Image (cartoon, rainbow, N blue to C red; front, side):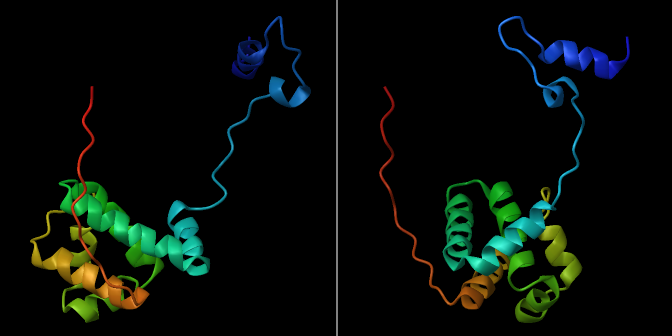
Amino acid sequence: MRSNDFSALWFATADRPQCQEAKKVKKMALTRDFTKTVAARVERDPAFAKALLDEAATLFLSGEPETARLILRDLVNATLGFERLAKVTATPSKSLHRMLSPKGNPSMDNPAAIFDAIRKCLKVSLKAHTVNLQKVG
């Protein structure tokens, strides 16, 4: 039995007749890179860009810097780009790439400069506020 024959058996059930397409399962490549998808959405939807910036700031201030860095990286790619960010922050582009990588470990000054540059690019201000945690149970 070939592997695609097995997948056809896997999806077939007694209670549900299968169409030809469901019997032949093929792997599909992603049609678009995630970074390009985010960039396109940021370009056409300023509210989405602002929401990403807000989420990155909230995550950063809430003790989740890893996720905040990844969102910032996508936002930098979609707005300023790393070369322009390097000029604005007076930090080498390579260093910025490392800082915003999953294992990056930037000092407190660097994320502040990145937030400031994106904030200015989007023409928004950031305002932090506390939110009461909901009690569980």
